[in-house]
Length: 281
Image (cartoon, rainbow, N blue to C red; front, side):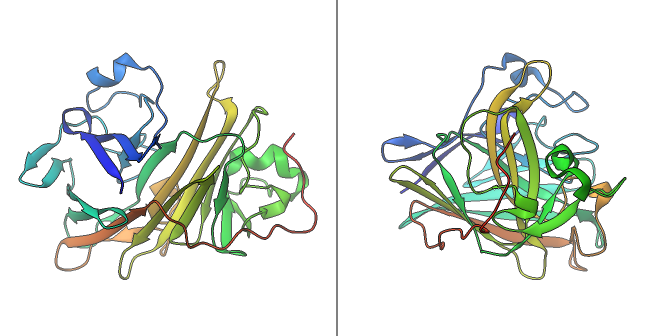
C-alpha cells in the first residue's frame, strides 16, 4: 500500500508518498514556499509538484504550483489562467492511483509532469524499457563533448546509456545535473530492497518519463542533490520547444483525462547498459 498526502492550500504539492517503513519523497527547507503567489519564481521545497502547462520556460514549473487548490469530496482542483485541473487520489490493492482531468478550450496544448523528487540512496537504480528513445537536454552538453550540435534543444540516444551517459545509475555527488526525457510510460525505482513503480496512462496523448539527475550540480552557487522521476504528458520540458507530437492537446470535447498509477512492486526488466560508457566526470 502507498499513502499520498497533499497540501491543497500551497499549490497542491504532494508532501508525502509513503510505503510501509519508507518515505519516498525528498524535501528541503524552503519556508518561502508557503508564501508563493502566481508570478513568483519557483521555490523548490521537494515533494511532488503538479507542473502544467510547462515545466521549464514560462511560467517556471507551470501555472498551478503557486495557486491554492480546493477540495470537493474526494477531488481536488485548481483554476489557472487558461485551464482547470482536477485530480482524485484513490488507494489500490498494491499502491495508489491518481486520476486527472484538464478542462480547456479545444486545441489547447500543454505539457504536464508529476514532478516527483525522490529520496534515494547513491545505490538506487532506475529501470525502464531497454533501448527506449531518450532525449538529453543542453545541460548534458559538457558531458557528451563534440556530439552536441550547436544550438540543438536536445539530442537523442538510447536508454539506459544515451551517448554513453549511465542515466540508470545515481552514484555519489559529482557536480553534474542532467535532464532527460525517455519515451516510455513506466519507470521502476530500485533502492535496496524497496521498489516503486510509476506508470502513466493517457489514450491518444504522448507519454514519457522525465528525469532530473542532479548530483549536486544545480543550482549555482549553492547546489544540492535531488533526483526527479517525473511521469509526463509530452516529450519536452519547455512547451515552447514542443513539436507537433511533443505536447498533449485538448480534444473537441474540451476535456482530457489521464491516470498515474503507483505501486510498491516492480515489473520492469533490469537495464542492459551498452558494453562501454563514459563515467560521470
